[in-house]
Amino acid sequence: MMTTATLTQPNSEPTRARALLSTADFRLIREALSSHARTTDDAKELGKIAALHHRLGSYT
Image (cartoon, rainbow, N blue to C red; front, side, top):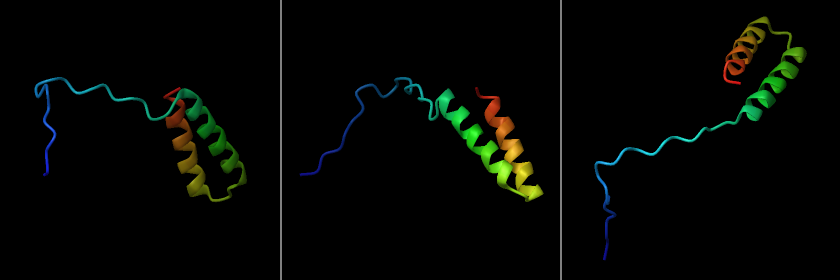
């Protein structure tokens, strides 16, 4: 016999989303990007790394 789940409160508000990354995660990712940037000679990739590094900094 197959049953289906029913909502007990169909008009309730959705639950609050939890953060995927912590502040410490952003710092670690920024450090990793900095390390990678020091070993990369490709100017186009360096620009992408710098932009991502900047965006991640705005979240900390």
